[in-house]
Image (cartoon, rainbow, N blue to C red; front, side, top):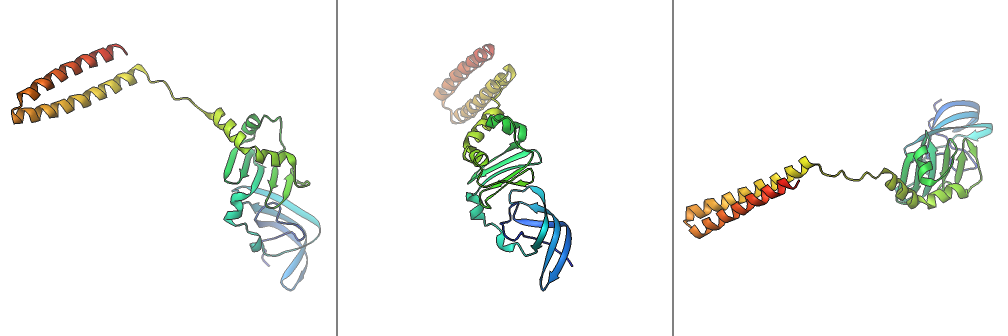
Length: 222
Protein backbone atom coordinates (compact mmCIF):
# COMPACT_ATOMS: atom_id res chain seq x y z
CA UNK A 1 0.00 0.00 0.00
CA UNK A 2 1.28 3.50 -0.83
CA UNK A 3 0.13 6.68 0.89
CA UNK A 4 1.11 9.96 -0.74
CA UNK A 5 -1.20 12.54 0.82
CA UNK A 6 -3.01 13.00 4.10
CA UNK A 7 -5.53 15.36 5.62
CA UNK A 8 -6.77 15.65 9.19
CA UNK A 9 -10.54 15.18 9.46
CA UNK A 10 -12.31 17.81 11.53
CA UNK A 11 -9.90 20.65 10.95
CA UNK A 12 -8.43 22.46 7.94
CA UNK A 13 -4.99 21.54 6.61
CA UNK A 14 -3.44 23.69 9.26
CA UNK A 15 0.22 23.42 8.44
CA UNK A 16 0.23 23.54 4.68
CA UNK A 17 -1.41 22.75 1.39
CA UNK A 18 0.11 19.34 0.65
CA UNK A 19 1.54 16.73 3.01
CA UNK A 20 4.11 14.08 2.21
CA UNK A 21 4.06 11.10 4.56
CA UNK A 22 7.32 10.25 6.33
CA UNK A 23 6.07 7.41 8.54
CA UNK A 24 2.64 5.97 9.25
CA UNK A 25 1.14 3.31 11.53
CA UNK A 26 -2.07 1.84 10.13
CA UNK A 27 -4.75 0.59 12.49
CA UNK A 28 -7.42 -0.40 9.99
CA UNK A 29 -8.54 -0.31 6.38
CA UNK A 30 -11.97 -0.18 4.84
CA UNK A 31 -12.87 0.19 1.17
CA UNK A 32 -10.77 3.01 -0.24
CA UNK A 33 -9.75 4.61 3.06
CA UNK A 34 -7.61 3.69 6.04
CA UNK A 35 -7.27 4.88 9.61
CA UNK A 36 -4.00 5.51 11.39
CA UNK A 37 -2.87 5.67 14.98
CA UNK A 38 0.18 7.76 14.26
CA UNK A 39 1.63 9.66 11.30
CA UNK A 40 4.68 11.81 10.83
CA UNK A 41 4.11 14.32 8.07
CA UNK A 42 6.28 16.75 6.13
CA UNK A 43 4.42 19.55 4.46
CA UNK A 44 5.32 21.78 1.55
CA UNK A 45 3.74 25.13 2.24
CA UNK A 46 2.71 27.66 -0.39
CA UNK A 47 5.50 29.86 0.91
CA UNK A 48 8.41 27.66 -0.20
CA UNK A 49 9.18 26.42 3.29
CA UNK A 50 9.00 23.07 5.02
CA UNK A 51 7.93 22.00 8.46
CA UNK A 52 7.11 18.69 10.12
CA UNK A 53 4.07 17.88 12.24
CA UNK A 54 2.92 14.70 13.95
CA UNK A 55 -0.51 13.39 14.78
CA UNK A 56 -1.34 10.61 17.22
CA UNK A 57 -4.01 9.45 19.62
CA UNK A 58 -7.11 8.47 17.68
CA UNK A 59 -7.99 7.42 14.18
CA UNK A 60 -7.59 9.74 11.20
CA UNK A 61 -8.86 9.09 7.72
CA UNK A 62 -6.48 9.31 4.82
CA UNK A 63 -8.00 11.36 2.00
CA UNK A 64 -6.80 13.29 -0.97
CA UNK A 65 -5.91 16.90 -0.23
CA UNK A 66 -6.41 18.08 -3.82
CA UNK A 67 -9.56 19.96 -2.88
CA UNK A 68 -7.65 22.00 -0.31
CA UNK A 69 -5.19 23.56 -2.74
CA UNK A 70 -5.36 27.33 -2.48
CA UNK A 71 -5.78 29.30 -5.69
CA UNK A 72 -3.33 32.04 -6.68
CA UNK A 73 -6.02 34.65 -6.15
CA UNK A 74 -6.54 33.51 -2.58
CA UNK A 75 -2.83 33.46 -1.84
CA UNK A 76 -2.53 37.06 -3.02
CA UNK A 77 -4.97 38.34 -0.39
CA UNK A 78 -4.02 36.16 2.56
CA UNK A 79 -2.02 37.10 5.64
CA UNK A 80 0.76 34.84 6.90
CA UNK A 81 3.33 35.07 9.68
CA UNK A 82 5.87 32.28 9.64
CA UNK A 83 9.11 31.47 11.46
CA UNK A 84 10.93 28.40 10.14
CA UNK A 85 14.62 27.53 10.12
CA UNK A 86 15.59 30.85 11.74
CA UNK A 87 13.87 32.85 9.00
CA UNK A 88 10.81 35.06 9.23
CA UNK A 89 8.30 35.37 6.40
CA UNK A 90 5.34 37.74 6.49
CA UNK A 91 2.79 38.01 3.70
CA UNK A 92 -0.06 40.48 3.68
CA UNK A 93 -1.82 40.74 0.35
CA UNK A 94 0.79 41.60 -2.27
CA UNK A 95 3.38 42.71 0.29
CA UNK A 96 6.06 40.33 1.53
CA UNK A 97 8.71 40.68 4.22
CA UNK A 98 11.49 38.11 4.57
CA UNK A 99 14.60 38.16 6.76
CA UNK A 100 16.47 36.34 9.51
CA UNK A 101 15.04 36.22 13.02
CA UNK A 102 17.76 38.53 14.35
CA UNK A 103 17.08 41.14 11.69
CA UNK A 104 13.33 40.84 12.22
CA UNK A 105 13.79 41.58 15.93
CA UNK A 106 15.66 44.74 14.98
CA UNK A 107 13.02 45.84 12.46
CA UNK A 108 10.09 45.03 14.74
CA UNK A 109 11.66 46.34 17.95
CA UNK A 110 10.86 43.00 19.57
CA UNK A 111 12.82 41.22 22.30
CA UNK A 112 12.25 37.60 21.31
CA UNK A 113 10.07 35.29 19.23
CA UNK A 114 9.34 31.54 19.37
CA UNK A 115 11.51 29.07 17.52
CA UNK A 116 8.79 28.23 15.00
CA UNK A 117 5.46 29.82 14.08
CA UNK A 118 2.90 29.11 11.37
CA UNK A 119 0.13 31.68 11.54
CA UNK A 120 -2.11 31.49 8.49
CA UNK A 121 -5.15 33.67 8.03
CA UNK A 122 -6.49 31.69 5.09
CA UNK A 123 -6.39 28.42 7.05
CA UNK A 124 -7.24 30.07 10.38
CA UNK A 125 -4.45 28.34 12.24
CA UNK A 126 -1.83 29.32 14.78
CA UNK A 127 0.91 26.76 15.45
CA UNK A 128 3.70 27.88 17.79
CA UNK A 129 6.61 25.56 18.56
CA UNK A 130 4.44 22.62 17.49
CA UNK A 131 1.46 23.55 19.70
CA UNK A 132 -1.91 24.55 18.27
CA UNK A 133 -2.94 27.85 19.85
CA UNK A 134 -6.20 29.70 19.59
CA UNK A 135 -6.91 31.67 16.43
CA UNK A 136 -6.85 34.60 15.84
CA UNK A 137 -3.73 35.73 17.65
CA UNK A 138 -3.23 39.46 18.11
CA UNK A 139 0.56 39.29 18.22
CA UNK A 140 1.03 37.60 14.85
CA UNK A 141 -1.86 39.30 13.10
CA UNK A 142 -0.37 42.55 14.40
CA UNK A 143 2.92 41.80 12.66
CA UNK A 144 0.98 41.25 9.41
CA UNK A 145 -0.82 44.57 9.87
CA UNK A 146 2.56 46.28 10.43
CA UNK A 147 4.22 44.82 7.34
CA UNK A 148 4.79 48.22 5.71
CA UNK A 149 6.50 49.51 8.86
CA UNK A 150 8.70 46.41 8.85
CA UNK A 151 9.57 46.88 5.17
CA UNK A 152 10.45 50.53 5.82
CA UNK A 153 12.65 49.57 8.78
CA UNK A 154 14.34 46.86 6.71
CA UNK A 155 15.02 49.28 3.86
CA UNK A 156 16.47 51.86 6.26
CA UNK A 157 18.64 49.23 7.96
CA UNK A 158 20.04 47.86 4.71
CA UNK A 159 20.47 51.18 2.88
CA UNK A 160 24.01 51.84 1.74
CA UNK A 161 24.64 55.42 0.55
CA UNK A 162 26.43 55.71 -2.78
CA UNK A 163 30.16 56.16 -2.46
CA UNK A 164 31.59 59.62 -3.12
CA UNK A 165 33.52 59.73 -6.40
CA UNK A 166 37.29 59.68 -5.95
CA UNK A 167 39.63 62.22 -7.55
CA UNK A 168 40.54 59.61 -10.15
CA UNK A 169 36.85 59.07 -10.93
CA UNK A 170 36.28 62.81 -11.36
CA UNK A 171 39.31 63.19 -13.62
CA UNK A 172 38.21 60.23 -15.73
CA UNK A 173 34.76 61.79 -16.15
CA UNK A 174 36.24 65.18 -17.12
CA UNK A 175 38.56 63.56 -19.67
CA UNK A 176 35.70 61.57 -21.17
CA UNK A 177 33.68 64.76 -21.66
CA UNK A 178 36.76 66.50 -23.14
CA UNK A 179 37.46 63.67 -25.59
CA UNK A 180 33.83 63.68 -26.71
CA UNK A 181 33.92 67.46 -27.31
CA UNK A 182 37.22 67.20 -29.22
CA UNK A 183 35.77 64.56 -31.52
CA UNK A 184 32.74 66.71 -32.23
CA UNK A 185 34.92 69.72 -33.07
CA UNK A 186 37.20 67.55 -35.21
CA UNK A 187 34.26 66.30 -37.25
CA UNK A 188 33.00 69.87 -37.69
CA UNK A 189 36.44 71.03 -38.80
CA UNK A 190 36.65 68.24 -41.39
CA UNK A 191 33.41 69.41 -42.95
CA UNK A 192 34.54 73.06 -42.86
CA UNK A 193 37.83 72.18 -44.61
CA UNK A 194 36.08 70.14 -47.27
CA UNK A 195 33.62 72.91 -48.00
CA UNK A 196 36.20 75.70 -47.78
CA UNK A 197 34.19 77.50 -45.09
CA UNK A 198 36.91 79.69 -43.57
CA UNK A 199 34.57 81.43 -41.13
CA UNK A 200 33.52 78.08 -39.68
CA UNK A 201 37.17 77.02 -39.44
CA UNK A 202 38.08 80.10 -37.41
CA UNK A 203 35.07 79.60 -35.14
CA UNK A 204 35.99 75.97 -34.52
CA UNK A 205 39.61 76.90 -33.72
CA UNK A 206 38.36 79.41 -31.17
CA UNK A 207 36.02 76.85 -29.64
CA UNK A 208 38.86 74.36 -29.41
CA UNK A 209 41.08 76.90 -27.65
CA UNK A 210 38.32 77.61 -25.11
CA UNK A 211 37.77 73.88 -24.62
CA UNK A 212 41.44 73.32 -23.82
CA UNK A 213 41.42 76.11 -21.25
CA UNK A 214 38.28 74.76 -19.58
CA UNK A 215 39.73 71.24 -19.52
CA UNK A 216 42.96 72.42 -17.90
CA UNK A 217 41.09 74.44 -15.26
CA UNK A 218 38.74 71.56 -14.45
CA UNK A 219 41.59 69.08 -13.99
CA UNK A 220 43.49 71.51 -11.74
CA UNK A 221 40.43 71.99 -9.51
CA UNK A 222 40.00 68.28 -8.77
